[in-house]
Image 1 (cartoon, helix red, strand yellow):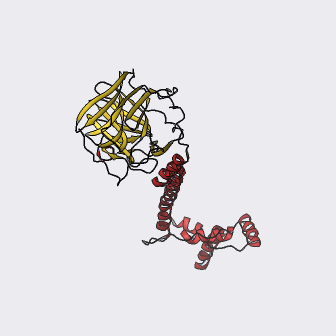
Image 2 (cartoon, rainbow, N blue to C red; image 1 turned 30 degrees about the vertical axis):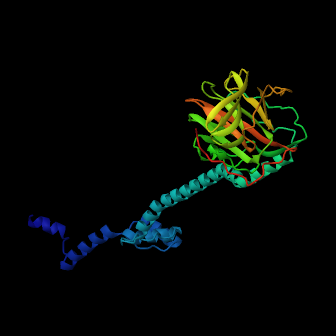
Image 3 (cartoon, rainbow, N blue to C red; image 1 turned 180 degrees about the vertical axis):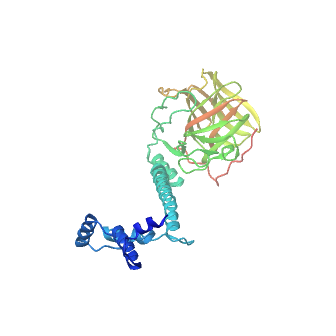
Length: 378
């Protein structure tokens, strides 16, 4: 730059101070505030007090205080922090809800099972002891007139009609009876009148009570079922059925002493027979034709008075014959027990629905102590 130009920059006749003045003048021209901005700043100052700007969390807190919003608590970064506790509570809540649901389900199942099982349990608890049923039936049997026969139950093998014997004479008294109306059991046990069955009915495993019937099965040979005391004159009545008559029969015994000494009346499908066994030697005293079918219930009445033996048989449910069908005379035995003697073959089975033993009141029971029959199979 030439000297002429310098003289033109610094005005003519100016000093150093004038040069400083010129610089000041330029500075004032640059920093002079504009009237519009000053007006806005004054309007803002009139409405509220201007605050200096803040950064980060201080700025957020300040803005929240100005808006009236509560300041959020800072998150803690410790092991037991609020965020961790919230997360744990969130996870624990479903587990607690599952536990409540499980407990409710178990409670409902318990109530349901109780509702289902409670009636059978109560019914079982209401059942009377076994002895009470026997005593009740014994009282009923004793209260029944001697001239009437107990009505047998329905048969389990084949159709059985109700036995309806004619009225017995007034000179008969009941000695023993069994209707077999008791719970199923092995052996015949105690009869409905309270007398225990003796002979094979007490010891043999082929005897059982099932469906309110005395039954024999899975055996082969002759079996004795003895009931009541010894007596001299009287009769036996029973109703029974057999599934097959081949080498098998249904029969009653009187004046039974043991397995080798007795009188017997029986049906074998073709005949009604009177038989005696003395010392094991059997003798047919008399017989008449009598056709009987398997799986049908038949009633048989066998009487001894003095030396006269008499018997008759008929289909259960039909009228009892008024006359004896077969008779004989024999004086080998004077007294003994009454009961049944039943013969089984392989595959045969027998059902007895009712049994009665009656004494003639014109004849007193045999004197001397009552003998207990011995169970022996011949």
